[in-house]
Image (tube, rainbow, N blue to C red; front, side, top):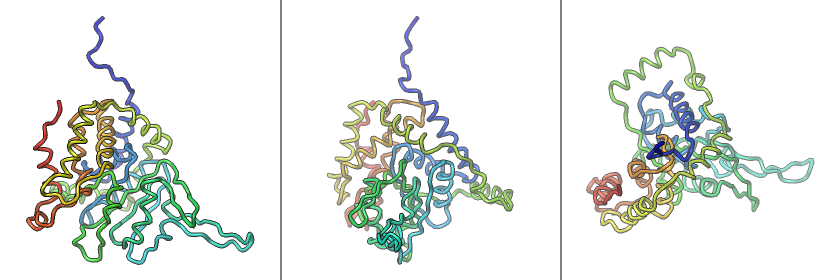
Length: 325
């Protein structure tokens, strides 16, 4: 009997079913936005955080809520405002008169999936409360460290910075997000479908239609599976070269850090697993390069004045490289 040319080394059936279930639950409410949903699921599997940018009303917050609802885990929402303090996010020590001691009252960030709505509405002082939490999965308050529960994921939404009353996110904050997703307006056909769908729902609340597709323990298990995905040495070299080009490109003032290389590798593993494969292909890498890099590079001032975008420069870099086969 001939041996097959390819034998699946890892059983990804449970992961494929989970991804399909989450997609189906979200599609009950959300029309279109397939790329946003795909990347959020990939980030969930790759243990990364997501920044979603778009004008108000394009279902950024709704999609984040639906993803959280499809996962049977802790969920909290923080509305960022100009007067929000770091203690409103992390929590604060509260005096207990009976014990004559201070007890730490945990803030809303202590959950599994945390929706930070309009993250760029709060100043840098409040945004900095998320730096340690997002990178090290822990919070230090009054010299004591409190670990986050696993899994932990931040889904942040923001309006374009040109809009009134917004603050630009610092580079250190942006670098902690695995993806930055740009949400476009729906097409006319999609908008008609949105109107029809919500008209048919009547008094039914959207979130009540969504069921749990995964629980916290399953996510932790699937993440371990993702880490064992096969990626060839030539693909690792391709990722490293790609990121190196962002540091030497004439249109870029500040290039991507090694964290970007790791982000491309980890997210491409997740995308491959979502396709039912236990190995990474060049197409998997190319499908995540733009959302991984667009918020990690800073263009030179003259290129910004010319109206060139980060996505344009990333496309130039990819087109100028030899993609391994």
